[in-house]
Image 1 (cartoon, rainbow, N blue to C red):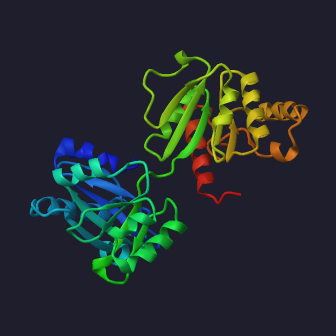
Image 2: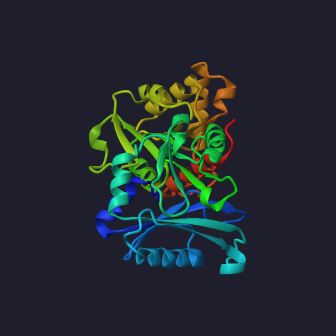
Image 3: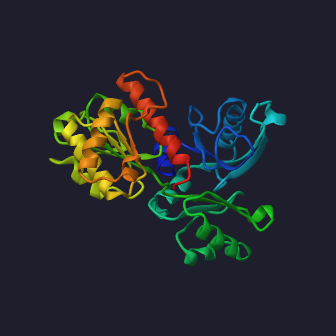
Length: 337
């Protein structure tokens, strides 16, 4: 689950004051990456920073902060965990965690003063000062003078990256978190059994699925928040609206429709992935027809069919969806060519 700032108010309404625990630095082999977060109340912990002894200790420390003086505003603390020596975990790396308490005043500030669609959520790692939102150089006045140049350089070079900035003094250490994280754009053509499983397996991940079909009745009654329904008479027309780095997954109820969509994606040429459900026989037939439509061999080499072929060979919808998800996530982590 991706625990963004937007989740804070929801958890506060349900449980009262909460602690947001965020990985602000990860060195070596660690169970989670910088930016991973969890929200801890006195009754539950949602999200994960890695599990095991690390998470057990972090939850206990978070709850001790919930019991601390409630009049202290913007209560924060950091802890560094050498995972091998201190916790006996096999990872052997080191994680540094930021603990932040959010009570009524803090929740009100974040809800009213922070635009959830832009810039960086920046705050000192020590107690006492409110966060600031940084969307450009004009916002840097809130930072210590000695850190401004570092902020500007870091933001310019690391868009959508987590940044731990410091002038070497502990009291001037800031953590910058991108407010709106980039979501993986997936265009899914087909709302049948496999399409539904694909949407299901991506739940909780940083994806945005545009789910396309020709008939509204083919969709389930409930569309998850990470998916958006699009009903069009000709699904291939949706290709034009996709970003250049989109992942296209083709599994409509009709082979002619599948062919039209694949042709539209290959003709456009700008995409990260084109996967087609089917067999090697379907692949051969589609390649023949696409050649006849004038698609080059170089373009045809980018068509993945069967999709998820590196995974299990079962034809169960759920298994196909899992194999596809693994294929997309593996490709998403690879450098773009």
